[in-house]
Length: 191
Image 1 (cartoon, rainbow, N blue to C red):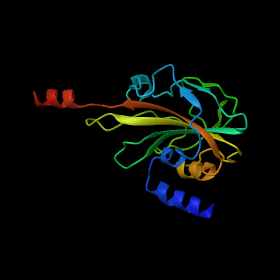
Image 2: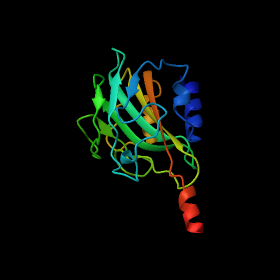
Image 3: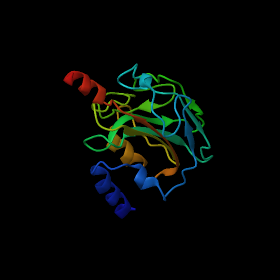
């Protein structure tokens, strides 16, 4: 276990995708979908910093019966500095079947407890990639745990990952994209 944990700590400090750690170790049997966008589709502006910046609605199913807690991570794998966390929601009840649009940006909600994202804020902050360049990929990863994480409000991404690493029994993934293309804007500035 110590070798596994030390290897994970070294690996995660390099800001790599945590999903890489869980693939081939636990089943990806949880269904995580959104009525707002499909897997691999563009995230609507409403859920980004260019819109209302509210969390999208999510639907959850196929959670293992022996799960005692759910944890949701949302992050950008294409950020210039490496993985950038936009949302940390944990201490979620395992029988939760959906998250509504616009989960409040409060430490404790009806759906779980929220951590501090890489913007330094509590709760969800949507996609906000730099202008120009290609679309970024945003992963919503739902983890089912066989033990409670024991985390209090405002945990950092590292604290969340450290507390769940050995207790994940299944996961589900939803990926959306968003970009702030700039070619038209740049072109209009030239003219």
